Length: 166
Image (cartoon, rainbow, N blue to C red; front, top):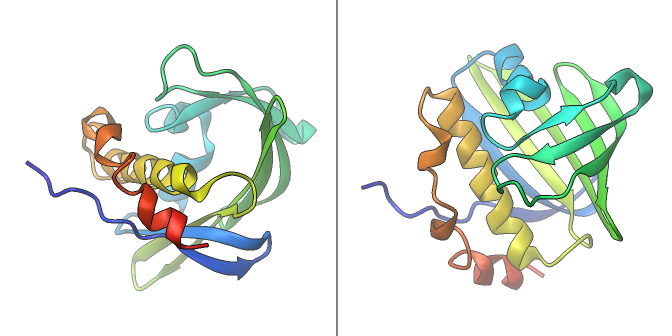
């Protein structure tokens, strides 16, 4: 049995204003981590897939880890500087999320800092959600099965920590 996940996110000032930031560190090369976070076939292993032409500045994103009921999201690409930074705005109906991530490598360790604008939605659901998805990314990049990461270990157990960040 694996240990229950602990919350790691923090509120910080960043390019999106006040943002929730969560980081993960990998022993894999920067380019490999970038590919896992941006190539549709690799994204599908841990969160979802995109369809369309990113060169046009937007794609349709479909969550694959949430079942067939998850609605498609329009994803407007605001910044993309491979293999170091990406920013986008996603929306489903009236809900809009401002997301970004940065990758940097030092001494053979690649660090991902993922961020979402703090005012987009309740941190009590956003925080556990990104912890869950980033741990699924960890599983994929370490050769494990992402489906072994259980959503029930994250929500609602981590919600109180994230609500108290405000």
